[in-house]
Image (tube, rainbow, N blue to C red; front, side, top):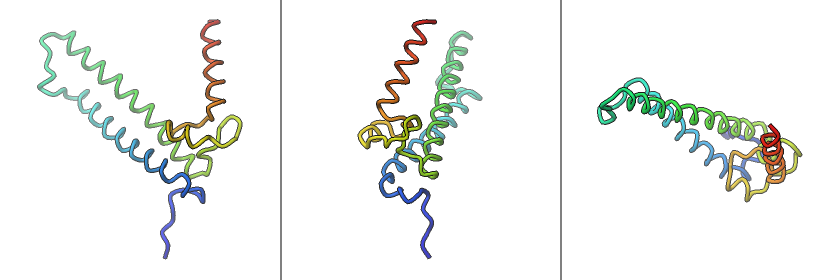
Length: 129
């Protein structure tokens, strides 16, 4: 009996990206665990002579943990797009995202043109604020 694949019929075309994304998912889960452990009980090597230093260290780990969690959400959304058959299709214009872009940013949900338009829109919104 043949094993079911994790993705849709487009799986062979996107298998290389799935492997990269799953590797990033594993690395992020590991990093989150490490950061959370550091927040709970800092290592003896990180002992600070004053509370300000210790607070700064905790704040650094909290910032890292939040970043890793946001990135993990993006990675898991990409895996969902793979399994639903939407991976490699721009969420805005529904055109295929170039393989070159996916090689550079495997979790991209927008083609380069739509991503640039989005960033231009955000930049102009920020300038007018």
